[in-house]
Length: 121
Length: 121
Image (tube, rainbow over all chains, first blue to last red):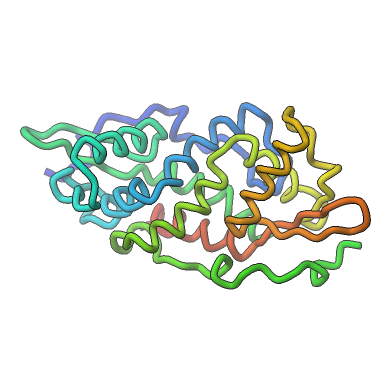
């Protein structure tokens, strides 16, 4: 059930670390457009709660039925999960009745490195 | 000129790492509200370019006169720099004619740890 290889591969352009650490040089317009989408996806409290609910669930994946308790309607949950997917932070797979979501560690690591390398310098 | 101790201290509640790594447990509503503000500040291409321009400038600080070449008007630059300050990511100080901005490494490190610890697990 929790075999992660069942999940469709995320689009490579979303998963690849796109940009240098933020303190290496000013980002170009294109780099900023791309990177801002990932930060923007986590820049909403509901999305951040949904994301941490998936990330902290066993195996880094969760059924939507396990994570919807964030005080908003089902359609709103779906809308926010879609935005997290579009930003490359989550992948999803339908299993019978329910859609399951999984975090994309490579994307998180790339975002973290943008920040922690900048912080360490 | 670049003595960082000249800068006013950032508000402690903005600089302190507020929250566990995103995969430790679901964030509470309050934690998510606070953390989302920091991600949201970087979730805009213009702000991200301004931020990386300051962070990559010598000493991690820059005069606003050095970083305004991002294709938007002066008032728009000011608006975005204000949002970065409100999120605790930049501090500022007026020196004569110009305002200088400096990155807050502690805040960046805290944000990076939210992501890289989640990615590593």
